[in-house]
Amino acid sequence: MPRTAIISDIHANLEALQAVLADMESEQCSNIVCLGDVVGYNADPSACVDIIRGLNCPTVKGNHDEGVLQPVDARMNPIAQQAMEWTRSQLSRDHLEWLRKLQFMRMVQPFTIVHSTLDQPRLWHYIFNAGDAAANFTRQFTDICFHGHTHVPKVFCLDGTRAAEQTDALAELHSGKVDFHTREGVKYFINVGSVGQPRDGDWRACYAIYDSDARMITFKRVEYDLQTAMEKIRTAGLPEYLAERLARGA
Ligand code: ZN
Image 1 (tube, rainbow, N blue to C red):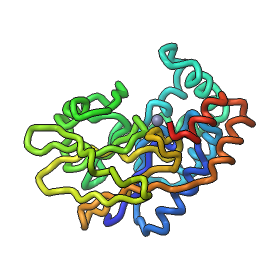
Image 2 (image 1 turned 90 degrees about the vertical axis):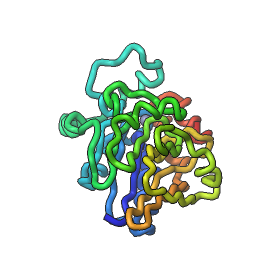
Image 3 (image 1 turned 30 degrees about the vertical axis):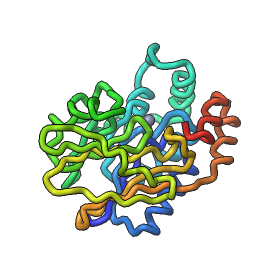
Image 4 (image 1 turned 120 degrees about the horizontal axis):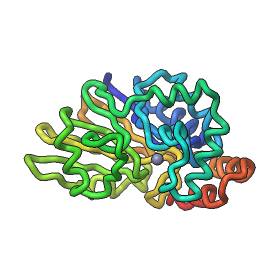
């Protein structure tokens, strides 16, 4: 598989998903994988599940995909709870069954995919720094593992025994496109950012393309119809905060 698009944290943002799918077509991606959180927060959960299911691509389960299957988690903040309840009301039994069957991690030769971390994929740990990433590397048996969950694109690596974050790798992502060349003998744990609710201060959808022949990962930002996505959140009666955070990329 020479060029694989990796998408994560779509969160029911149909406008963002459609823009990313169009962009990856122009990038001639031959495969696609999805790192979970197809639903939650935004206004089009059933349409997004239909699209991802229709792609029939390797997909792993995110905490929102799981949360919608269970009684509301009282530890979750009230806005997330409200969005979760609303999301559940929008999904058919068929949609819920598809979400239920998703696995927590998958090996997609020559890399691995997981929503949070490989060491404890069901506990939904957030990886913000190299210290957090260290435990993941103890369970990573491929050179590259892609993950999501924080909605912030990042590159962590394990060179020898030390886990580190390559902060310089994504310094130019504001330009809309960044190529990152992987080195042989180094392991990478890569967060591809979020399609439907970016939290790194940039409202544009984020995803990555892995070219296994060139050993290169391209991170991309894609503009989408933000106003429509925000309007749909308001029309659905979801919290205003969810519309406004899309515009802030936070
Ligand atoms: Zn998420």
